[in-house]
Length: 616
Image 1 (tube, one colour):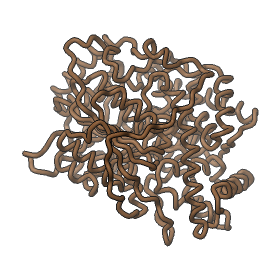
Image 2 (image 1 turned 135 degrees about the vertical axis):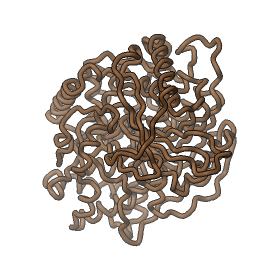
Image 3 (image 1 turned 90 degrees about the vertical axis):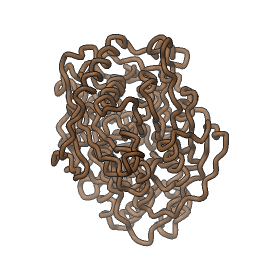
Image 4 (image 1 turned 180 degrees about the vertical axis):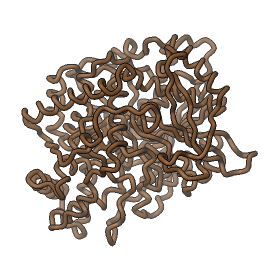
């Protein structure tokens, strides 16, 4: 599933190779994750994914949001499309929901957490490679590679922290954050403590970020040379030919061989279950009796898995831009749903551009704006801009308009400039950044390993081809790029896991002696493309006592820290007091972006990496 940078890599779902730029980021627009956004070749993914993501919207200097209004009922999302050509349905949920080997792994987690609590984390000045300045400090926590063998090989996860700024009497411990992916790093999260939208929470909590297993300097994964991953220009046809599809299959097979060759047997131990177990060890190492956690995009999924496995260890949890956790949707169906949602959001952007035809001169209707985009796509197919921006780079750059409104004006200006003879804005927007190639390749490798290991995928190309050819007839914008990102899972050599039945405590053991899960807070935008709204409704129903805050008629992926004061107040109140707004609440949408009087700097999360086939 592609996600957005903190904006959510999966999200899960379709990250389009350029996961980082799409993750959800806090209000400043700076990515919380190392760039893993998709760009180059022709690939995508979901939830997936997010640092407090709303922030990027602040870059547009939008006016303050209208006064929020709360109501007791959450709008009903339209029914998700049914994908019937591949087996695995709600009827199979019970048999598909119980992860194997849990009893042995659970004992391994207990042992690892006990050892981590004894050792703690030695926080010191951060290594130069992390680019984090004082007062932020960094450390490491040791976790078993395989929780079924806790005395076997261990790997180290990098951790960052900045202390709470308020009086000691008011401090509430550590707040751990994950921006999504799979494949995004939260190491930069402590930097957000100084931002205005986060200061109230930062006064009470230590802000703690970390790089999950496989990411950054935490036992990093790699499946190919970064230079090959960053190769550009590349092509991305919305309706590929049979010859192009054969190349997709060949590339996906080669990518899988690279994953196996570079990682070996350890490849099996990069999963959502392992991420949730690592979170429990991190909690213990931080000296926290119970965990306070904010997860965005894919981070909502493994946070929900954690809450199911360790309900008694949960203090407070915020799930921002929620992945659909239904076992039969992880991950193939979630990606199909995501492609549909991106088509709707792509239309939102075109209609906005059409309303501002006097500024951009791209057409007075969404159909005419689409014709302008298609004109640019055909031209780039013949002659890439700057020698590096082909049709895949174009698609990846404009996919970001579906993640965050902050990209609406820059994308429209770049398209208008290119069509009127100035390619430089488009090159600045869409060209891969060679300096980010290693981080981007690493994020994509983690994304692939986690999603392919987590759950069964269709094993025959005929199924992928049939489902997505049909889907592309009504949702062409993202469908085949999403396929390219996820197709390695069709040829994955390892036995897939069985997704946990989130919220179903009996799935992980007898209820006797279990502690009830405390209320958690869910945030979702009605028109979110990376993590469609139906996913928030699904998790809301699965977690009794949870509270769902909906930003109506909005689609930015990642809400906390953005320009919507209503959303931010609900998060602050919950994290500081534990109070939720009841079973549900709604917030009026953030203001729609306005064309700027002059070109503005691109959001820092805007640089996309190169791509290669690559979710929450």
